[in-house]
Length: 345
Ligand SMILES: Cc1cc2nc3c(=O)[nH]c(=O)nc-3n(C[C@H](O)[C@H](O)[C@H](O)COP(=O)(O)OP(=O)(O)OC[C@H]3O[C@@H](n4cnc5c(N)ncnc54)[C@H](O)[C@@H]3O)c2cc1C
Image (cartoon, rainbow, N blue to C red; front, side, top):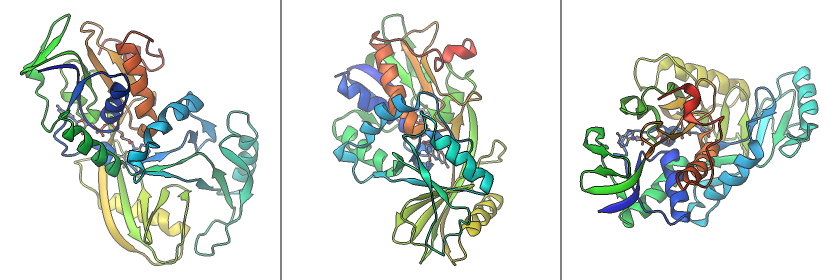
């Protein structure tokens, strides 16, 4: 069998690569056992503003412009939920900060200058809320399921662990079992630690826990952001998340995480609620908060895309596009994202 590219990993990074390769007519096969991956756990919010500090992320407009069309395709309409985010303001000083931020040229497209005072007595926001536009959330689980079905049907998916020892790498090509290809792209999230070529990249697993509650009467239609995000899922269900922790014993949800999430939710509403689900996942994070992409300095046909732990929804398609351009030799990877910024992997 011959393919142009082998993709290892089918989280948001691997999925976005499949979309990008398809648009360039480049053939591929994806390997993933589909057991446990971070993208399935993601709240899936897309938002180019750092809502703690009221500033935009690196290259925000270009990332939004390139990434959102991937999700807005009609085949993903059940997974795509464009909606505003209501940032709960905690004090008069934050109200002032919001007014200043919404006046800045790079932020005014996203931040509405008017402070919204909520008429719903069941949502406690005494200092009002700032409204962020052009945002929303992706049901990542649904999106990946739709994409998987299509790829599987097209014979482009191998539901298995990729065995690094079975990969033969030469200058011109790679061979994996009975498949010959020109390139391999590794998109394994925190699984990168087992990768013989890229395990030295500084990918740090960060555990995130989240809840789903059922809360009748909350009547929240938009995403709410305080110390946590509250995302309306429909039928009185809300997703609350997430925690951030670099110290953990295992991948199981904890009582401590649950207690913290509940405490944040109870600050927002006096209503009674029922706990429906509590789960956890690992974000692949990078110390400088930017993802890593690029090819291996010695083995040019081995590529890596990782570090999507923060804003993976926005980064995924943007990185896939950059990586495919680099693979075709039409554009270089931006130095700020290039994996060699950390030395040799
Ligand atoms: C609780 C939580 C909330 C989050 N909320 C948001 C949010 O609101 N917005 C946002 O933008 N981002 C959010 N994120 C971050 C983010 O979406 C994910 O971390 C990101 O999507 C990671 O994507 P990935 O494809 O790099 O990794 P993953 O999704 O982990 O995918 C990697 C895949 O590689 C596979 N793999 C690994 N090794 C092998 C191998 N040897 N062979 C075959 N397959 C292999 C794994 O099975 C896995 O499926 C959140 C993350 C968490 C945990």
